[in-house]
Length: 67
Image (tube, rainbow, N blue to C red):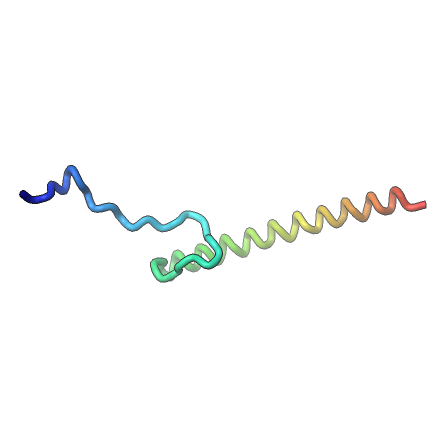
C-alpha cells in the first residue's frame, strides 16, 4: 500500500524567521543572507541608540545628584 501524499504531505524545510547566533547558514540563499545582514545591522543600530539613551539618562542623574 502506497502512502497517500494528500494525507501525509512532505513538510517543506522551514527556515527560522529570526537570526540565531551560531545557526546553520548553509540552507539560506544569498538573498536571505543579505536580508539577515540588513536586519542585524538595523538591530545593532537600535541597540546603540538604546545604549546612548541609557548613558545620557545616567549622566543626567549623576549631574543632578552631584554635590
